[in-house]
Length: 586
Image 1 (cartoon, rainbow, N blue to C red):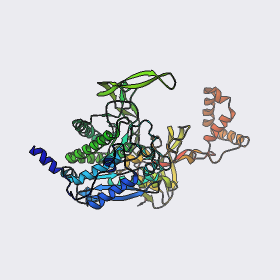
Image 2: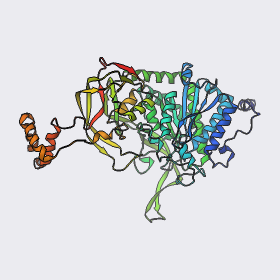
Image 3: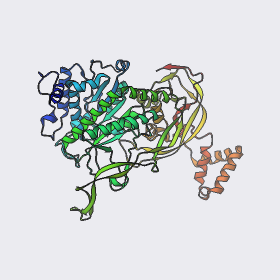
């Protein structure tokens, strides 16, 4: 009894004279989430009452309302550089990227309050700074409704997935079309957290778990951090949640008609939050609560997971810092960078999965068989878990990339994402590795405002090209090296080329009238016997080509001096050495 009384006393508010600190969720009926105005008002009250809490604007969003950050720091220090000197670890929590999935919004309001009001929780912040974005998709949260999450069990009202420009912000971390994403990038680069958590709600199958978890894909994370994640951090989170009676399982994305067919690890390219964070050696998590569970347990399990993350980072701060520092150190000398990945199904783990039997019955709509999950038939059984990915394409490290100043849209993104740039002091003719876009596929329908390119084939060529004073050079000897590779190598799945930022190079600007060029083409072949032999060999090998006069004329044109040298030449070139470049800092 004495121990229980002492524990209760330790958890009493430090300042009991304060008014009712319950959140809108806690004051409601269990099926209520805070509005945007209520959320900000609550954080403003916390900011006014507690010097450990600072609410600040953090840049614009497409809604016209600012993004906000909440910093919780025991000594009131909110300067990232100062806190790094104090050897603090940073846990960065972002909520409301999909405001129809609002558990993190409500859980974080309670968490921030409790971490300053409860003595036992305050201790976790002795070596940890907590950064919270209360609502990332402000636009969507203001677009409140009760129908768009048709599969979800509460709350009664919530926000909308798309932002004010109808972007899904969890596909915008690289292309950064939204002001939300650009504000986030600047904020993330200021903090460069050790751990990043973005809260979500799942869709899909029915099962017993309230909480599922996406962690940074282990093979895409730097090996030093991957080992740390697999051996220390993830086991601690799973064990901690089990003790709190919130058992977890990896995010339920499965290989066949039901989860029993095998779970598949999520491949997070840099368009997603955790994929973006991994480019800067930050461990990322996307907790996904189950849509069919009632709203209160979804909020409570989210609170529990966020608390477990902070507690672990507090306990293991030195080891986490050492793993991060080793990853940063090795990145500076990394010689090969994977760009494309494929699931390797020969490597398989096993998880004990708590599900429900899948059955079928006639549909009341169509009369055809429909699937349902029978909650009267729960089971626990081993399920295969495929979570090993292997690179299918790697690129060797260049010394630097040279980006002509004409491509300001690209330059702005590089600067926003922490890339250190230098500029040519004077015009220079340089030997560079240029790359021509030989072939690519383009999606037939728009995806997040773009017609995405894929299956890019390149033809590298060493060339002497002239660049101008003011053109930009990004050396790879910097912490943003992996970001540079992923965005500037055209074959990257989320490269700037893939997202269409260089599409103007794909259109030829000058051409020919065939009846005029016929005579020039004949002269080209007379003057270049080797080219004539190559053409004749192609004619013999390809019957369709041999019958197509226009194709043969085009073939000669492409290999003549009359063809545009810049057509399909990717404008960002690779430098293998910096040589005697005269550079100035940006």
